[in-house]
Picture 1 (cartoon, rainbow, N blue to C red):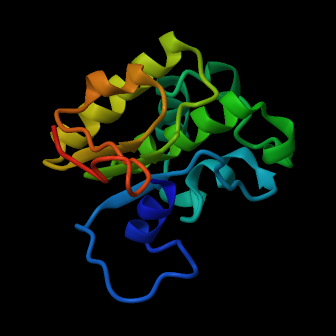
Picture 2: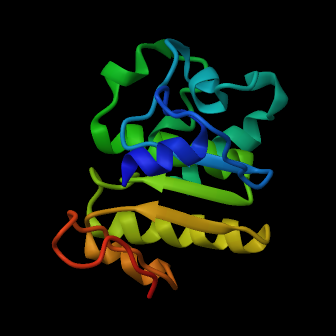
Length: 167
C-alpha cells in the first residue's frame, strides 16, 4: 500500500512508467524528512521559509497541535532527532496545512498520534482537501481513519480472495 502511494507521488525510486497526479498534490509520509537548521526551514521545506510570514508559520504549527513550537521558529536543531515520532508527524502535517494543497496523500501519517490528535488533524486535512476541490487519500492500519473517507480499498495477498475493492 505504501509502495503504491509512493509510486503515485513520484518518490519511489524503482518505479518506471508515467503516473499523472493532479496539480497541487502533497504527500505526508509516516517518517517525514526535515533538514537540519532553523525550525522555519524544516516547516517550509522544500520551499524557502521566506515565502511565508511568521504568522502563517505559527498558525500552521498551532493548527497541527504544536503550539510550543510556534515561538521557536528561529531555533536551529536536528529536528528529526529532537522531536518525538508524534511531533514529527504533526510537523509534517503542519507543512501541509501551511502549503494548502488540493490533494493530500497520507501514508500512515498519524500512526504515532493518540486518537484525539489523529481525529482533529484528519478533520483539518479533510476540510483542506474539500475546500480546494481535491481529496484526502490515506494508507492506514487504524480503523479510526476510515471515518474520514467515502471509499476504501482493502488489499489481500494473491490467492486469498479479492486483491482490491472500492466501497
